[in-house]
Length: 132
Image (cartoon, rainbow, N blue to C red; front, side):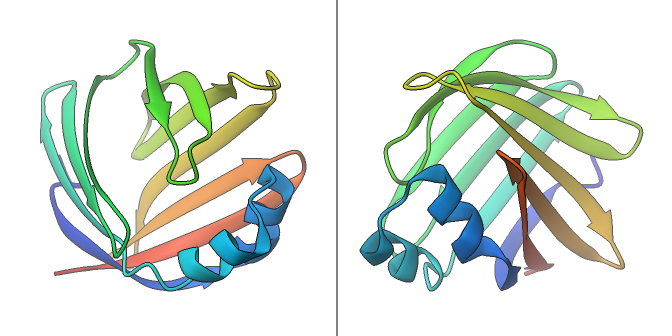
């Protein structure tokens, strides 16, 4: 439950290159870099409620650790997958519905910040959030 709270994006590392690898067009990539994303995480046992709010959309996501679910990324890409806990790291493995390629995402607390890491087709990126 260490993830509980509201987190606002502070900075990105290689995020544009990651989105390019995902097939996001240049206009959407430029907008996404300045989306002011805020994530509110509420964990109760193995159940999570996450609210994502940005300049472009607000979305509520509910999932249970280890249980597969469907999700639509901000650019409209449809994925299916699961989140699991590996030690203190929340790890998501998602398969794209359009091409069956795998997107891996992790969330970890590092130095009081929430670090969300992504890997897709050999490209790594990070978004770092500060607690509000």
